[in-house]
Image (cartoon, rainbow, N blue to C red; front, side, top):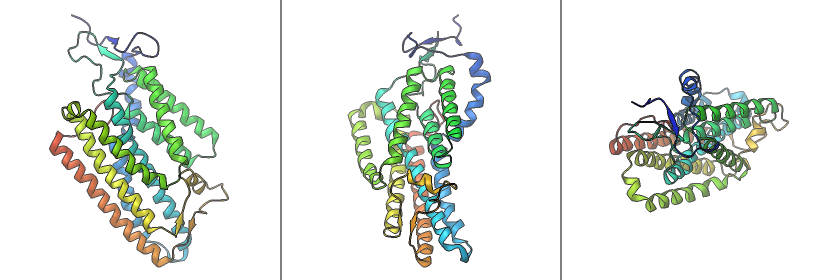
Length: 327
């Protein structure tokens, strides 16, 4: 009888593709990293964003009357930051998942003598779970520690160790981890620097590409419940993202102006002279009305998300966590 815990290379025997699975590491150290991965799974991130977007207007509706101007600026920076991050998470659904489905490359490891074939068959490349962690860490490290090199270095070291964790747990090869992180960083770098109006263009172009790719692979797509379920979630999240970003910019037209997402870094840096210098000329009555509009928009978006989950559950069965994360 072959030893079923013995892993062999599935993609190749060279250094960048071979299996580096280490049983003792996966058993004793791997679970500690899973704590961070659970908190950065796409499914949980979008849920947290929607809850925060629902609570923010409620919190700011109850405010002291003597600090309206500062509160107005603080609220607009906070909501726009969460909306921007929510848009980043949607990249996981509209960029990483379609690429992973089309490439359909398995992890580097499989169990010798196992009929299952792949080591963790629900892991795909690029890894949505590792990409989600990378995008989250990159965004919040730039938002909170934009001018603190020491903290940015610490976060980069943490991401490197996270990649090593995936490699030693048999989920990614060296090449897969490098490409996944590189793609995550490129998306972060790009998304930080484009004007906000480009986000609306993305919300038109990305779904068209998403639909076109799956039409080309429709036979394989409709035979895969996992891919079908994620597509339903992608559609509901795209509609929610499109709706909230559009509504925010329509209600703030002429009152609030931020050039690019990277400009939010200066707004949240307490040491910057530009702290809360976001252009905001809302009258107090207009601001109160916008808070109520944001509250209703958040409720609509939450409904769209929950509706997507209900349809997904009805069409493809219970939503289960896989080796590539709860997506």
